[in-house]
Image (cartoon, rainbow, N blue to C red; front, side, top):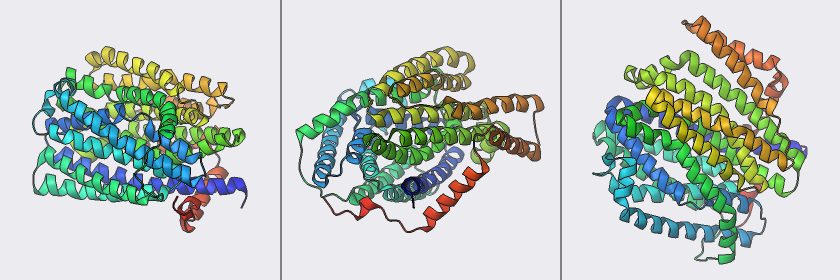
Amino acid sequence: MSDSGSVLSRFIGGTISIGLGNLSTMVLGLLGTMVMARHLPAEAFGTFVLFQVAVSFLTQVSGFGLNESVTKFVTSTENKRHRRQLINTTLYFRVFTIIVVSLVASVIRPTLFAVFGSSLIADLAVFVPLLFLLESSNSLLKSILQGLFLFSRIGLADFVASVLNLLLVLVFVLFLDRGVIGLIYARVIALSVSCAFAYSFIPTRKRLEFHFNIMKQVLAFGFPLQVNDILTFIFRRIDTLVIGAYLGTVDIAYYEIARKIPDYLARLFESFRSVYFSFMSKLFAREQWDKATQMLNNSTRWISFLTTVGALAALVFGSSIISLLFSDRYLPSAPVFVLLMIRLNIALISNLLGTALVAVGDSNKPAIINVVHTAVALLGNLIFLPIFGIVGAALASLAGPSATNPLNVLFLRRRRVAVKVGNYLKPILAFCGYFLLVLFLDPTTFLQQASIIVLFVLTCMLLSVFSKEELVGLLGQAKATLLKPSRNPRSRSSKG
């Protein structure tokens, strides 16, 4: 097999390995959400969302950019001893930061409650540090496995956690009727098992060691990423906080239902992005610019096509999907669902471009980009939400990545990475045309709606977004990868 074929095989194999775990997370998580939506009051569901946002806030403001940094540094070294020192040093530093941040959070608890809502004050506050510990640890452990190219083990850990979480949601919510507390119990237990699996999968010796020089290098690279993480949290979750402040937890529940499918699809995309980041880091480290550029442009093209198909499906089937999955009481979420699926397209493309920037070594550029993104998202929420309600929040979330996409392209081109904007613009422009067609025709039967999706796919083929031969080749490579026994060179290496 050629070198390019071998790389493609490993890339697809890694994506499938993590993808199966994330697909299980998506499907089983969606089933869990269906249980919550149908058996919990909207206000209780909204309260649980706020609780998760508080945990996510602590996780992202205290990460020091370690997740991306450790993947980058582990991927870039072949020295087993240095790899072991890097992994152990990073793990112990993260444990230290978790303890410090938990103590600080306990001291400033009233301030946190003022930001995230008084509904968290009662029984939920005690669980915030525990979930923060587990979420933070789980993210870092999976980043280490990602750097080691152990993608199948990430998928396995995610699959086990997803199955366990759904079973526990059924037990605590349906049978024991524990409400929001039951959801938290389920999350705590599932994450604990996931962390145990991920930790045991790391093939280096776990030693009590800490190397200041290594940590200094990791933090120097990761500091701009930390700023970026904080900004990312703000523009991803500012809509939830503003909705809570202006409208209340019931509207948070409506908005959360609308964003569930886009969020799960974004999580499924992480399967691809994790492998993409590892391979792009390796290609740039070896100065294989042509291969890295080709991988970038092919990735943005396919992601744009797939997400525009999803957005069009949301447009024609949105109300039916919301009603079928979450019941008719959440039908006000349908217009928001469509807008958030459109946003998903632009956001994932920008994510690929930003990830390439980090892989090439520009860890400070995503933070600059996200300053603009955050400012646009915040301003948009303050303007649109009071006027249009939760639809306004969706419009604001769409404005952010749209404004910053050109910046990603500009910074990459300055690093000699030739981004082909037309690759991902073609599906978007085709979608705009079909969006107007749907508004004009207002298709109501399943046959009419399905026909629009088929015509859109054919239009993209005619526009050379993809070719039949390319699609057949990718499917054949995926099939061959699935049938071939896993032979990961990193997994065969001895412990360092």
